Length: 353
Image (cartoon, rainbow, N blue to C red; front, side, top):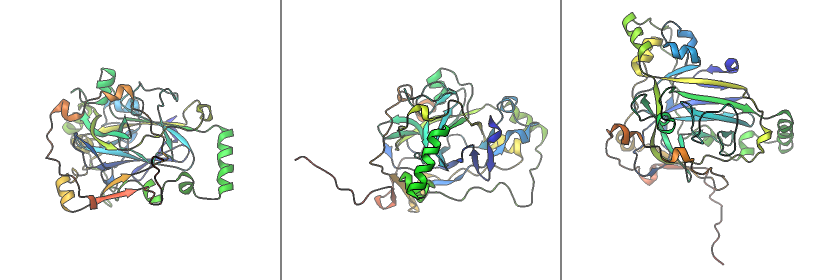
């Protein structure tokens, strides 16, 4: 099933023209609700199968890809799709949209997937009321991962992606509609090209130094990498972001997935031991970013049908509550630093008559 998944630069290409990028970003404070933080470049990706002699045995069993992430580093997922697709996103074996156990089938009660290309990105677990809680990397076994708080056990870690395409008849209708409208996909779906590219995109990290292949790590380091604890995703700060409901009948989608992939989260030392490459340095801190006057983002969509709070996810505790908060004091960005995406400046509001 995973044979149709490919790495293209710093992106994952799934069947049906679906592309997913894992973006580095600033970690939000866990109090209050905030605008979207900037993208600081894409995490590099490597195939687990290329490092069978160094990767942990469980990783080899799951296959997929690995990426390097620092503890408590935040990430968001950037999506694009050439045609409508339903994408499931799991943190461990917990659905990031519904909070329910991972399933190989699509569900609408509650919805356990995001709809592409309608959903341009996902920055964290669905906390309802137009908000999410940021994805933050944490070691398993400390009780901070979403997986453990929802399911009672921290076993799997990583990120799961699974994509479903439209059945032949709905896909043919969609293509016919595309032809009639004779517009680009981005115009059809009402998301600007700049918004679909992600909030504050930055150049991806290169695969490695030009002309230099991976350097085999010393045996003790490789052995340590194979036994290192897995990383999962905890819940970070809250930000404004809709998780859109699906306006198609559920039976428009195929009953089985067309592709899936397991994304393993490696610590910086583990990444170097497995791949022979240095991990990207830790991102710039919030204070330095704000002091430079760099932008944050706000995405407004009055037509969006936001999913309600997912019951199992509503009670998830943020990372700081579990591990202790080691973050610097929060200084909000100036209003002039917030770039509004998708705002309709011509929309007229109504009032009481």
